[in-house]
Length: 290
Image (tube, rainbow, N blue to C red; front, side, top):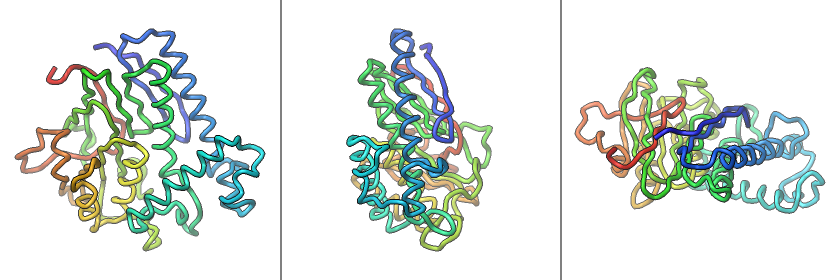
């Protein structure tokens, strides 16, 4: 099936969209522009690289999280959204035992919610697209994707090998949900271990599949920072839960949770399981088995 596509630079990365061409082209363009406007506004609020953004003002002590309602550049709804993001960051810190900590990013440590905000923003943009009639789409947020379908077809997502990026090692068949990865191939040791105060090491890439991109992205970041403890973290996460993961280590060893196989049945029985993704997902759309 042919796809409508577009891409725009936003939030320090590239957001792109693909949608089945059954949707009206004008509706697609209007909905996509509205989603991009939303993402632009989110960037103005949460970017630590914009000197006068609310996040930058928190970082340099001009105000605290308890003063959100007093900020003239935040609407009441945006202040409430900010509290939601703070709650998301607190949840990720708690569930990862501090491996994800938005309050201890970098050296010296400071507040930077970017590791949670990108996925959260993509979820908001995806929900807006659905509201505007683009119900089936793949929204790619700098390599992490939110997938929605019409209830009949599925997305086939090609996954790269971080050690041999020219190879597609597996295809994930997903009707609805999110796929997020953290890895060192694209941006080097960009993941900071807040507990040991140094870059994460030992793992080349972590891929998480689940219902929500904000949590999937945060879990992938935390697992990469955990290094040798990542398997236990993902095993606990995947046991009876909706989030499943796959790890590729620096020595090219691969491990995945049992539930990950439901998205990539070709993994079963492989001596060298395929996994991982550090760059852009390659998505196609069609009926299951087609």
